[in-house]
Length: 450
Ligand code: TRP
Image (cartoon, rainbow, N blue to C red):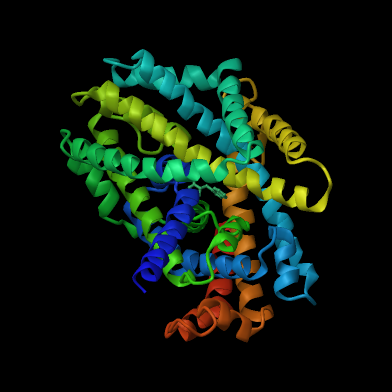
């Protein structure tokens, strides 16, 4: 009995740690602060929190359910859960395309992070005033070869890990390292909050001014919530398929949502007081973390050491995400064809390198080339989280709410009747009516800028 209990505990914690590891990444520490900054601060965060818990978490629970029930790749999962409804596989196909797009710009940013490991090791940013630090970032990203090389390194690491089949090993490794990242984030929060003028940053984060919110900002809060939780594209289905039959899907999704949100908020607290203390602009966009954090490190004892540790851990957090992004196309193609995993990995990496090159060059050579008024990087970043992921999320809730047989759903959520699911009625109401409608309204009003 005793050992049974212990094993149960260890596995559910393992499931949470693995799924949280896949969700926590650049989305929390790079993308969250920059979208908060662009969208005016506290009011955006309030909307973000509502979306994460009231829409994101139920969608994650739906994905876990489909994944654990189907035990298959993202595209075939829909047909397996409900064999008559093959058309739903288009949601999976969209997830496939979405994961390739995300991987393309994500690896550019992961490359920047890796470059900052090297810069910190060299001490290249030590003692520089904040405008010089910003120039270092601009000059680096505007260049052609250096950012491409850094991105290539990320694709190479990821490809090697996937071909060698050691993803599980890396995950275990990451499980030990992520708590260290968490510790450093706490430390950085303390440093940032004690800087002169910190109160301005805290007010930006915690005093909402709802008059600043428009429908675009609301749509980007939704996009950020889905992006950060890795949902709306089938990635959580893969995690769901790993979750043991005896673990509670509900608890797992709640714990993952809470952990992911917590890390994002910590990143905000570490960054915004420093933004104001060093006279930077909160709305500077994707460069924000790379322009702000070196100043914080410069202002603290042992800063060089913490800078190296921070960027190393952030690179590792990014690589655990690139691994699961890569897993979506690779696992599908390898189940459908006879090609070797190594060959598939190589081809997928090449395609991603191609798209990623365009994204990377959009900070330099291709800066003037725009699609619907967005640079290629911004376009990929925006199109995935503000269009494809919300559409995917609508499809997933409709599928679980209206297509999946209810008894199958109840049985999956209650582990065949062994767990009490008093929340089911509320959940079912949300995913049948509220979530699809709310997602649709946010999406349409954001697109039309109502
Ligand atoms: N959630 C990840 C992050 O915050 C990014 C991400 C989005 C992702 N979709 C994904 C990661 C799918 C893995 C798989 O960094």
